[in-house]
Amino acid sequence: MTQRWQENLNVDSSVRINDQYIVERIRHAVLTQRLPPNTRLPEVTLGEVFGVSRSVIRKALTRLASDHVIVQQPNQVARVAAPDVAETREIFAARRLIEGEVASLLCGHLDTVQLDALDTLVQAEQHAHEQGDEPRRIEQSLAIHHYLADHAPNRILGVMLTDLILRTSIVIALYKRSGMASCYLGDDHAILVELLHHGEPDQARSHVQTHLDSLERLLDLSASETRIDLASIFGATL
Amino acid sequence: MTQRWQENLNVDSSVRINDQYIVERIRHAVLTQRLPPNTRLPEVTLGEVFGVSRSVIRKALTRLASDHVIVQQPNQVARVAAPDVAETREIFAARRLIEGEVASLLCGHLDTVQLDALDTLVQAEQHAHEQGDEPRRIEQSLAIHHYLADHAPNRILGVMLTDLILRTSIVIALYKRSGMASCYLGDDHAILVELLHHGEPDQARSHVQTHLDSLERLLDLSASETRIDLASIFGATL
DNA sequence: GCGATGATTTTTGTATACAATAAGAGCATG
DNA sequence: CATGCTCTTATTGTATACAAAAATCATCGC
Image (tube, rainbow over all chains, first blue to last red; front, side):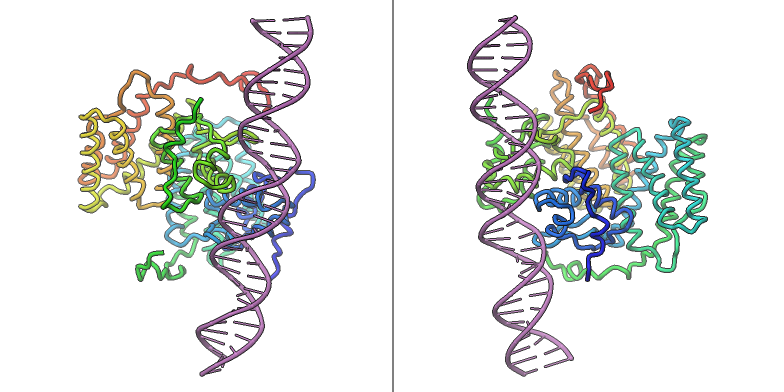
């Protein structure tokens, strides 16, 4: 099979290529689901695409593995992560905790400019949804959540949330019900911005948490989806 | 100055040396404060100590940097991280959130064997404190918190907590009041185990959070400690 | 056709060479 | 004595060569 995604990673000659740049390019490709779960990421291929040697690619892959974006097993090619159902639930639970706290901390502490920026994103998402432009709607939706992460008063929680947003994108790509066109959840984001403006911290926290819960419920997490883990059944020590 | 810490990192020839092993050795050395904040970690030196080439060291350092154990700036030697006061407060706040949730999830869900194991650790800590063996007391205290992280029903939160425990150790080494012999907080750990056994989840959460708050208050986080950040004062763009 | 076996190819693991950058020592000068 | 300069040294950045492991593929026997 041809590796068509290479086109999307082609380098811009005006940019300095280093591992940081490559990490961001791959992260973004995973975030926007152009690199679906389980995609193979061979070092030499990536090296040719980005025009650098394996040393640089290797560093980038190591960092991506630390961020749980890809999985690396010894002597095997790196792949885009594909969490199982149990881990998916844990990712959502962790995100509810972290993003709920971030929303609570942010509540009442955003100035007019920031609230306007959020409002613009919310309206852009709604507009994209009405136009039926799902990729653009996803992009706006992600921008809203990233805005919370980037402006979190606690930067530790901010980067944790950034990571969890990415991992959530991966599992949504994996477990989205086939028949469902969109994961749009109506006025949830608009209500969130309103609560961040005039609401109480605990209201904002609860709203974020139920919003993420609704998102999780849109997925098909019936256990049968998962490949049977023979090792856990027969107790084989890997 | 001599690099005396090398002795502590000497390799055991019966163990296979790879980047995973090196990461764990360095993490443990930082955790037990044998590698204090700002310690220089040159690649060639580490390579000689562990008997491997820079390739392996480089991979280990990249992972340690992703975990915020060390900081790497371009063309400069890696150093053990030394968070400033603001980041220290954020680390504690994040840990209160995560460890509180883990304790809440664990409450009432540990079996007798696990509660006994925790109880043994608590008594060992108390014993070490009475003997005045502070290094051993710290070791036991860390073991208690790591036990919570390792047994968290949510593995995502578990690894987040593991990281935060390490980062907390770093800032304690940095900001411990010079006159203070110990950070022992009396019966806090014993009460925690009791709450995990018979208490309500929210009680366990609150107890963990106040425990961590007490620990933070033991530190000297007066802002004057921090080096003045000239860039932020004069608005220089780095 | 199906499965096993062995050769070939692909891919990663590690070491090393060389370039580029930063840090430090020594020295001259005001 | 402090300051600025140059040269040397220490250290990281990158590419590449070779070894080791895994995956692939063709072949053979049944």
